Length: 108
Ligand code: HEC
Image (cartoon, rainbow, N blue to C red; front, side, top):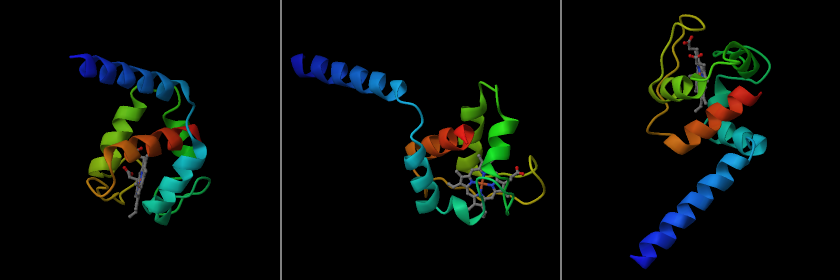
């Protein structure tokens, strides 16, 4: 019971710290490279997929953007930016990494 409580506290602390940190731009960029997102995307120009800056602009002010885009990056899809589909990235890329990537994309 005591251990349980300590773990719970530790979890709450971690979450608090996490949300206090702004998006880690270096980590996002590194993940995008590791997971080959940059094979189809660039930050400032359209390649196979849209420029990340354009994605950030499109979803600016959209509170649901993170959720929407996490699902999209996981499952893949097409039709928002054109007829070329994005292949599914899950489960190749972990959910946590996808969330970091989406937050990074939106911060560009
Ligand atoms: C094989 C090429 C390819 C790869 C690899 C790829 N993408 Fe995409 N991505 C696309 C295409 C094409 C689109 C446009 C899809 C559309 O029009 O709906 C897209 C769209 C997106 C969008 C915008 C989605 C929307 O609905 O507005 C995000 C965010 C994104 N990609 C992130 C990523 C991330 C993160 C990775 C790496 C884990 C990744 N992509 C890997 C081709 C790719």
